[in-house]
Image 1 (spheres, rainbow, N blue to C red):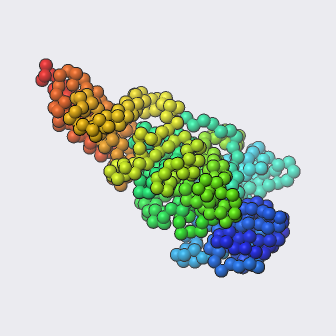
Image 2: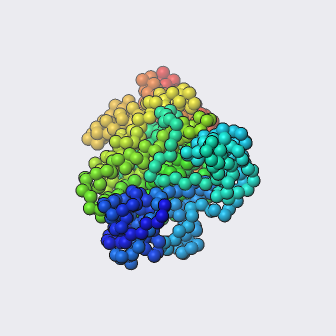
Image 3: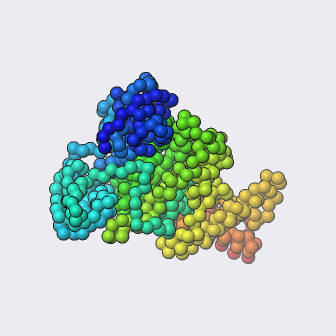
Length: 588
């Protein structure tokens, strides 16, 4: 396509309007002014195009030139993505620092991937094989744990007539496919428009959990592998720490973390922590399986809107290799605010609280790209994307539009509570308001793969917490001493579930992660103590003596028992039962 040139007639912050753009298409990328700023067409009226610019627009004025590229906003996909740190439009931040220093300069055009680095390509297909889009023809070992699988691009099929082995750049031909009409050169590089989901063969219903190592999530409100979840909560309730914990410990092959409009120091924490932390699944640094998209609150607002799409497209690329991918978006509220600002500058009719009328549709477009899918290709492999978005409602008001639109889409709601945060109970996920619509579907998986009694213990824990909420009203009115001995035991058990089980210290080297095996042993310890205590009470034991058994102190310390010493939790359970049973005998 030949370049089309227009002229700026209006500048309004990150939005510019150019005339003479009759032949451009929606979402085409343009270069603005002599500085070659990157922009994207978001509205067309006659020969006038409204363009959101992903860089600082100060010093721009009417009459300056706008040149179209003829292509939509796209990302580069290939070897070199892992361990990468990119801005909202996939420019590598390390290269940007080298080019312009600590503050990103304007108009810097740096390719996302290194086009000069040689990668060792190991062919898996051979000459004569008939291939179709999505088939894996070879692999590249990106680092110690991630294998980049080179796929036939979408739209290409036929017979392999040449395939090579050795070291190549991502632009060099590694295979040649004859489609019957022409020979197509296949390279390790793919480009994909970020606003268009990558195709797949079929979408399937999620059936197994994404294990996070966070007890309140895995036990009470699990998320399925390929599911979608929201983490809403007011300022200071721990949304970012929850997101960081999920990024660190979730049982996914690849993590894509999108820092969308949040504070820069939070992204700095990620950059500092992840290379130092050891992945419990591989024993290697967590950064080895992580891609970071950093578009912090001081970076251009328009790029904030693009960063979500950049992240989900990279996630889809790894999904297409057959990996399980988890994408964290922190936070979708800041992304929605960018939508609102651009909508206001376009002078569109505002919806509720000034957000555009298409807010719900855009949120759904993002979350619907998650899921478990059967992929293209002849081997019928399966990949998944699990999407977890933080929501930051102003003042913790869950009735605001972004929260409500998100709740209509997601199936897991981890509602963060300001009152729990003020009590220093973290994660501050409120067990009375949160829910997971995947729980019932995955009960059989937990019973078959973790423990046959998992579902029973989970339900008992929820019943005890709900009973505590009912009794709490009475305690506030007349005090704990007015409760019956049975109710006192229920309150004590609920306290133990809350403080000894659900409370989890993200910064403690042992407590930060709990395997499912440890979770069921801890939960069994607490619930069995409660049931044995109730039996002892019915057998004539005194409630104060039951609460004072020495072994009960160990229940609170069980969370600090390492994964290598889980049998100590079983020993503690036997000791608790023995000491409480002794009280019955003494009364008899």
